[in-house]
Amino acid sequence: MTEPVILADVVRSDFVEGHHRGSVVVTNPDGTVAWSAGIVDQPMFPRSSNKPMQALGMLRNGLPLTDELLALAGASHSGEQFHVDGVRRILASVGLDETALRTPASYPYDDQSRDEWVRSGHAPEQITMNCSGKHAAMVATCVQNGWPIHDPAREKSPDGVWGQDDYRSPDHPLQQAIRVAIEDSAGEKVAHVAVDGCGAPLLAISLAGLARSFGLFAAAPADTHEGRIATAFREYPEYASGSRRDEAALMRAVPGLLCKIGAEGVYAVGLADGRGIAVKVEDGASRASSVVIAAAVRRLGLEHEVIEKQTTFPLFGGGVRVGEVRPNPTLFG
Image (cartoon, rainbow, N blue to C red; front, side, top):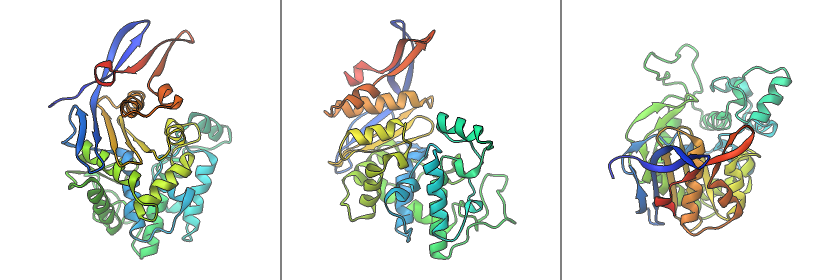
């Protein structure tokens, strides 16, 4: 197929009022494509779904994190207090504090955590940005290797690229190591480099490459770097996402499952047998990507009440549920 397909229907009061289009792919344990719909072999931005691969590049270069802090290093966290405390612990482990972070200031991602943060008198801060765990790990990796972190005299150029002494620069040795890790995991070369929302480099691979990466991580032996990351996510899913997040619920429900959501409607899953799944929703709607991922997991024969619940996203009218976003039955039955 050469264009996105209808992945999910928007149904209100038994009337289909719209659709979410996009692409979905399932890869075999050997990395080949088992099933797909839409565009799966062309470059796309994984957004935060690439964080396990970024963590791989850091572990390969001496990042000394384990357990919940390793999960936090690969997280788009909710900004709950334990996330904030964990970021501070990562930084303190290399003798730094949150002033070392180069994330943009933000409120917590989670609504409840945001409200608590505001009631406590806080403004947007760098440490509550959902990527601060990853950035803290990046800084820690730089310290371990004696690499520069940031040169205030060399701020971002007009084309959006940081000075090469900044840990966010694509030319920085940290980011070069992460690029190698992403290419190794995806089994393909990076096609384009951009700046992600957090300021770190964003590397384009195919949707099939993203699924392939997650299958690789999910099936990796526990004593490998990939296996360590997968284990951290599975054992501490609330650190890898948030205590009230669909991702955490899905990893708790399905033994061996590894998952990570990304911005702009991206979502990837790896299963313990080495199969991978990746979704990209064209309009960027996370309500659709979560539904489609759950439907794809169910299509592979996995059953659980959490999977069933996540295959629809409720729509309300007057405070009453009157419809839902649901997977396209032509694709998912």
